[in-house]
Length: 297
Figure 1: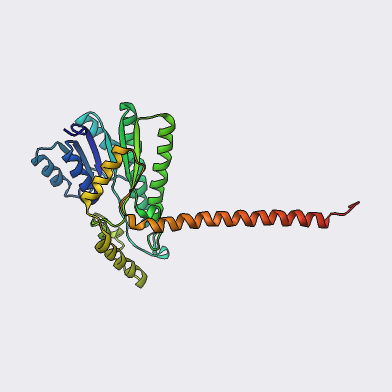
Figure 2: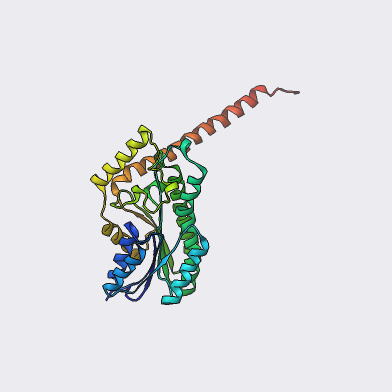
């Protein structure tokens, strides 16, 4: 019997994609499921789990709304008495040039991608601290680590999720807590997210007239999925393995490692060059000071 049997997992964005894959993996471990989404297909997803003999409830939840996420946590406690894994997974995105972005685009993506995670951590961390056990998984993206063009709100929000998770991990370690936290940074994964599912029509970027650069980005994303796209069950297996081993960072696609290393090397190189420049400026200032100083001045 799995050590997870009878434990409780909460998953947001659970009606499709990575969220559904996580729920399926947790179900195979014998976990009780609390599934959240705004997708109208969510009740049918819950019914499929119950038809297979699993314990699952569904809760319509807009993760950008703190009250709804708090209600989700309360429903989990009311139904199953605890929460042992919480996956703050709901997310959204879409390509657009910065100059074409509206304020509402920023608010919508940051609301779901970043505030959704913040709301989830605020709702579920106290439960886990009280239990003295549990693990939170926050879904970010490789876009939170490597910042490409034409997806500014997505990059900003996902970078915030990485920063939040790393900060929380430091605090949990320093406090000696038994609660763990991980950040999932998927690269190319076979999901429907690039088609903006469940995005209100007025928020859909794909419906807008796209520049040649945006069209090229879309084609590139499709090519990445064809060449390197992982299937969702593989990602779910990585997540459970990371939870069990206490890994903070979950990077699904190793082919992105050179780009990540390039970014790190660029930052370190700039810092080293700046240190050299600063040292030269200090020496120049000292030399200049000695040259301008004269007795009796």
